[in-house]
Amino acid sequence: MNAENYVTLEFPSRSANEGFARAAAACFAAQLDPTLEEINDIKTAVSEAVTNAIVHAYPDRIGRVVMKLRRRENQVLEIVVRDWGVGIADVEQARTPLFTTGSEERSGMGFTIMESFMDSLKVRSAPGKGTTVTMRRQIARRVSG
Image (cartoon, rainbow, N blue to C red; front, side, top):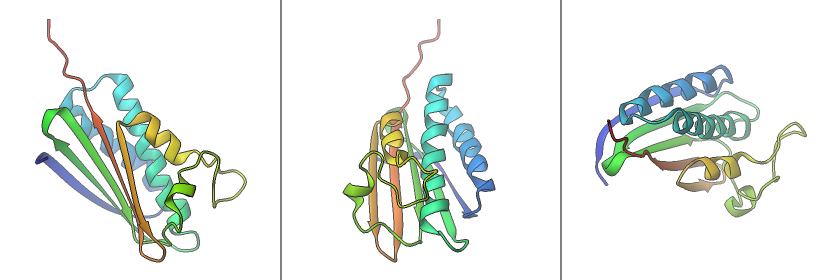
């Protein structure tokens, strides 16, 4: 699946950058002419992925986060969020609803939310090497009338 257009953003794992990542994803997705609901779904999924990288990948230091946005064939938006943090020992356990390695204010619903708002979610991780989250969402073509 070739990329028709793409952008790569790199930023430090500071909580202030979560809002920037959401806005950047929404602006990039706009070229696919999504509905407001589709934009909100994308922003929510990006927020969860970037927040995971900020909170869990680098719990005691500031690290590097890269977000790649790609427009694929057939109106598919692909979003990849990567970090080089602590990694996830058991990805399946981490994808279980309500499981968290964070503090009690964390809901443990990040991956579940990403999965529910996107068409596909792939998580690759290795302890000590970081995590890559790949999400895809097909944006419906609108018929002009």
